[in-house]
Picture 1 (cartoon, rainbow, N blue to C red):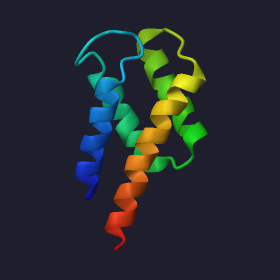
Picture 2 (cartoon, rainbow, N blue to C red; picture 1 turned 180 degrees about the horizontal axis):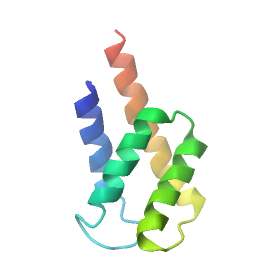
Picture 3 (tube, rainbow, N blue to C red; picture 1 turned 90 degrees about the vertical axis):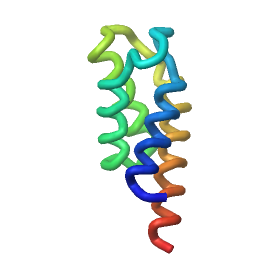
Length: 88
């Protein structure tokens, strides 16, 4: 899986995740920010904290860290899958 495909897969996961029930395409800017952070972060807790910060900054609403952890694990699984395939 190449980086572009990984980013696309991560974006699709984030599109399905609707923490504020805002509907489709409500989080385009946040998704772009989170996908960029995915390139930099490797620890689920760090990723979850950044996700929470990004979404809270835009919506001024609080998200429980546990909810962010769930999506963080899914995103990092996509990233590690991509890394494994790329390094072969």
